[in-house]
Length: 510
Image (cartoon, rainbow, N blue to C red; front, side):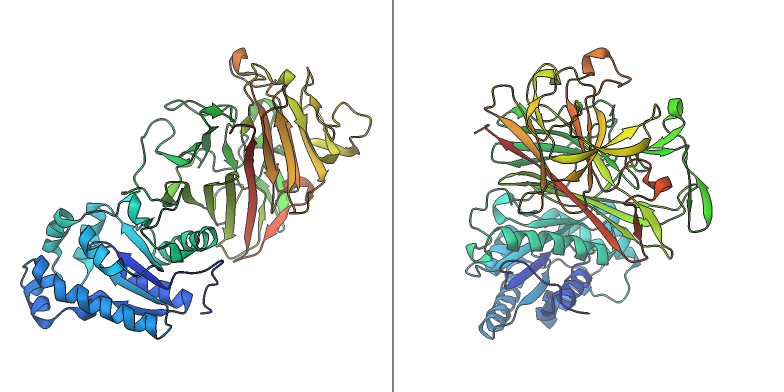
């Protein structure tokens, strides 16, 4: 396997830690293979006396472990002196053990594999031929001092196949190497890259678990239901008209739209020589709307204080007999919130695919009428009374030309735009500004985005007080009804991946 490339400066050493049964050896070995680095398992450095003691069911003391840790450290120093990069798997249950292994090794990175006690016990019960008896797990859990934020660990959940654990680890490592030089060391201050100690959700409710991300004055919350973005604030000011904690999601707020955004007329489309019928989820108009994953509980794959990676599987089902692995990463960066939605066709046949996301922006006005909107698009899609496109036309001379900033006024928008003008970095930027012009938020459309839907919420089925309170600005890879028209529809071949990137950049809030 070709080594995985790292952006920026990679660490010289990765220390993979966790209790017995967490999969340290398997993950460490696979990670080293993916990186093309040297791998060593800390168990290899145990003395025969230590092995005999553990096999007899006796826990090691700190004095038993001292020469073991010293031997591991000496090997790491020899590897560094020889110019080798290495992955070392080690239980390192206590903070002093990790400090011993990491002290003075400034280019080391700590990866903590987290699992529930029940999962760890089931794994140990199924393991055969290892000198560590399963009944010692309780003593390890009692001794465990989970890595704390000032250790800057990367926390990865183990309730997924080892290959997925490694992929999640590499995702976090690539970002870490791109953001800050590992020469700063694992004990240097890295704003926004500390890691929650247990990777557990903040709370549960109608939308499942939730995870709060924090970086400086920025704060965001993501929920398990649909992997949706609940809110985003800067300096305590909300930039999303989201949904309150403990409430249900209405109006599509913050939801991921997979494997199609917007509508499929009649829910019926032809693909691969078959006529397929999707469930009609917009019953009043006889359409299938916004995909199949809005009401699915997504799984936590990895998280830090300022980022979270969630994933789910879209299984074959009536109307969509295709298999997709879908992931979303939310990350707070110095310039704002960044989102990447990735789908891989893990099935055996080509799959039709589109994606979008449905956040509502606000700049603190009571209604959106006075907010100032800029949409850098040359064309709009005209639609019929069912919301389905009937043609494309220039925005020139229409009330929908927002290429120059102007207040929304009483205009009702539920409009798809395309022909996006992009800035030199390849992004198209939709701006919503406060009437004062002193602050606002830019929603940028990056890789995989060809369309943007702008919706002022006039037709929401909710109480009137929620209408026109925010502007939905939806990054989309394809137009509405693409499953039927084929316009800019992505056909994912087996093994192929599509990525959609968008983000929010606030301004005037500092």
